[in-house]
Image (cartoon, rainbow, N blue to C red):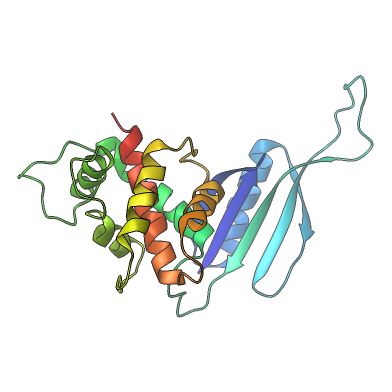
Length: 215
């Protein structure tokens, strides 16, 4: 499995999973051709390939640049065959955003007719309800953990959960920016918070943030 991440002008525009490096690279090339960029490899290892996205100098510019302008980066990261126990914080936020994007347009307010507690519409309804304080802080957390691939939620401090919910509701954090979401969650967590708990809480924060801004 390979992750392709494309950052353009400091905003993540896509995070996608691919079965092979070649498949991820083909996707990257399609993006580069469509955007009229070209690639310059940097910081490459056996499992991590990174490129700068370059825009050629414009000959019609009154003050043309001598060198191409760096407009962003693209990274292809190989995951171990067995997979990681949890996604890295950046990718956890990206995965949560992508999941919401796949289901939010079909979202309906929850009701007894929802087809099961784990159904995406039910999860989004819980997120909306907790974001508007109709539900206790942490009600959404088991579903957030499940979606993040986390099983053990022992010893989570309720004060931390409340602080995360408050931040997600009141913050101006851009919900489309994975790095900002991950940074905000980590800022509110105690030192030495494990990767599993961090991933679950990033999913929780992202879902609550969506619920706070959803109509």
